[in-house]
Length: 123
Image (tube, rainbow, N blue to C red; front, side, top):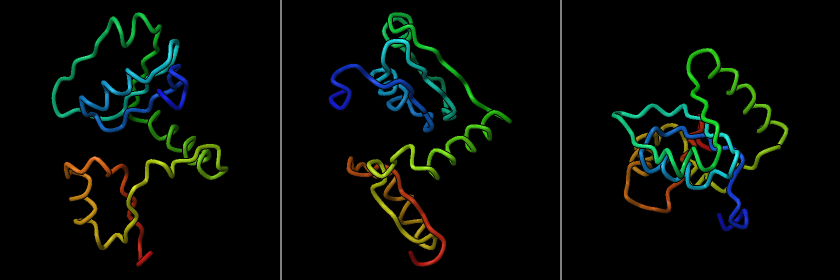
């Protein structure tokens, strides 16, 4: 919210399916914004319908199946043409052979871990 002077973001892409991520996503969504959900929760989640959706006039889009692949192509183009900078959320880069180490970082309680990117080879 600091980065948007309290206004919030236009679009939230919730990919984790975790209650905290969903809560945080609705908190940072601006009025009239779009919340796109394609994380798969392991159980039911709660949504603050009044504050997260109704009073914000939020649009909620659920993505699955074929449409999900369309969004992947769109995102791929955004990254390819540098329309979105994802570097601030990438906290770890490691070779694919260190998969286990990467997964341990992701599930750790360390609040400094964002996204872990695994590369083929020894990059």
